[in-house]
Length: 385
Image 1 (tube, rainbow, N blue to C red):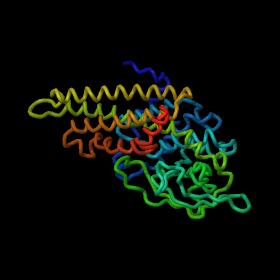
Image 2 (cartoon, rainbow, N blue to C red; image 1 turned 90 degrees about the vertical axis):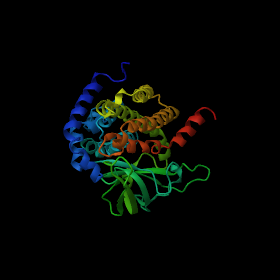
Image 3 (tube, rainbow, N blue to C red; image 1 turned 180 degrees about the horizontal axis):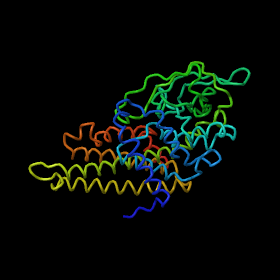
Image 4 (spheres, one colour; image 1 turned 60 degrees about the horizontal axis):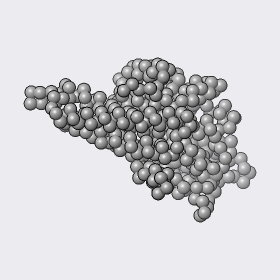
């Protein structure tokens, strides 16, 4: 079926990104995966290409687009090539919405030009060693100084994607003690300069997948943060986080769909080339039926993400809609990729084959951005259950 969600501008952008990936990413990606990080100067190249400024207003150096579909193209093209842009997806898809909606005019003038160019990379720190899905249980604190000029930040965060290379970290913290009647109150976001005294990047974590994306532990020991770096209103951040979660979950759904589509393509090409018992693996009925099932699943996933994309661009994507899209695509992608790996036989278990990397990479999609169990709870609640 003809896909109608993208227009000529999106497809032109797709061609540009595909060429860029082939020239600037594919030759170096094995080394990036081995080192566990994308070179810092690569982000400058993305800035020059305009990737970071797509949704940033022209007055700050961006293109002023409002559609999330360009981000969808980026996801599809990187996954198609079996690569990633490291932690930059957090920079654009997760952090930018907070700047666009909650930063004041002075903060936008101060931060957005560097954001667009790649001179100021950002990440967001929500998860703590003892707090994952239950964000209201965070214990990192920021106390306002007696003279009201700065906050003093203390605590720790973990599983922070892009945390090793960020220049500014959006730190979610408690600026007042939790209210027993409303545990969600009293949370704020501080945009912390990572060069600040007392700010420490701890271990870069060794993950199962997403090897080229740096994921770190952070610690804050009496870090002084100017009040001018408070994002939005003090104590209101839980609502901000909830507001941006549908887009985050849409991004994860897009990633899961793209991973499954790539897996089918990799498996298709492999079984056409591989022979066993003197025949192409593709000639066996089991192979044909497995790939037919996988193709059908991918078609269904595409319909779901395309509908969600249209709803998001129209401002109509609800929390339950996003949860449903994430739950369906991530759970389905896991099954599809597992089947496609099986068709590779022993080679599917070798990390030199992209199907093995996809198998490892996709596992986290059922965890981050809200676990599948949390997605089911959101959907059930929307049904009045």
